[in-house]
Amino acid sequence: MIYAELNDRGSAPSPTPSSSTPNTRTDSPADADDQLTVIARMRRVAHLLPRRTVIFLIELYRTWVSPLRLPTCRFEPTCSGYAVEALERHGFLYGSLLATVRLLKCGPWHKPGYDPVPDKGPRELWSDLCGRIRELSGGPQSAHDGRTHQPPSRRNDST
Image 1 (tube, rainbow, N blue to C red):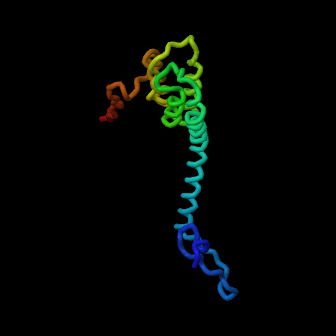
Image 2: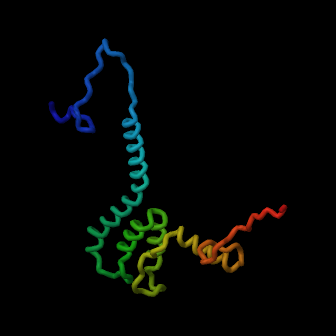
């Protein structure tokens, strides 16, 4: 048997049904799991595709365009390195926003130097902001402030 006749699992294809065998389709749980795995893979690829495309374009720039220009970057890490790290760490949307802000800083009006990618993403920044607002407004205390909340006791006062 030649390799072209093997299906994607590496086994030989099942024989074609003859007229004497009934044409029934048996869906096993393994086939359903395979379909779910394929769908999960397709979702993951669709989720990662924009990020990987932008990183690929940045790597093309770093390989072919950047060596032809004089090194004039005012920051450490360079803007392209910052963009790749931001995309890998924070995803497509927030990483692209960070890279755009960094490119806007590239003029003479901003102080040069070391400018790392922030460790906290948008979720952590939002939760920190909400916690600070709660503290300032005197609202309900969060469970993270070290105090323990005890529910009111349920005593039976009828006795």
